[in-house]
Image (cartoon, rainbow, N blue to C red; front, side, top):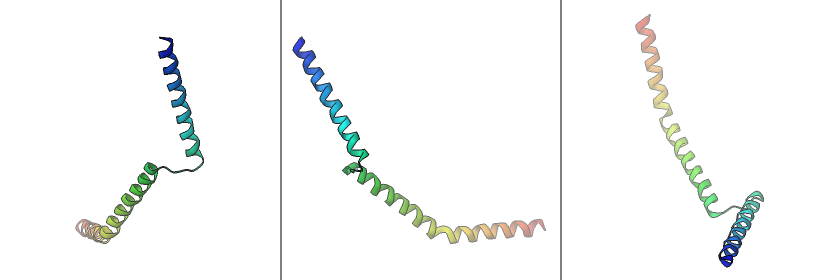
Amino acid sequence: MIKTICTKMDIAIMQAKTGFGRFVKEEHGDFGISQIAMIVAAVVIIGLIVGFVTDNLGEFLEGLWDTITEWFNITL
């Protein structure tokens, strides 16, 4: 029973050291593969949104302008 408790304590200490080591590396600016993948995914999503907006902005503004001018022509 004492060996089991000592083993569990050793495992907990190693996990704490590993977690602290990861924290220290992240604070120094080291990037992991998952962090790089998340950054690339965010850039791709933002690029798609910007592309969609710029492609459809002219049509949206024309439709908005037509709606506004029709609304004012009807009310005047």
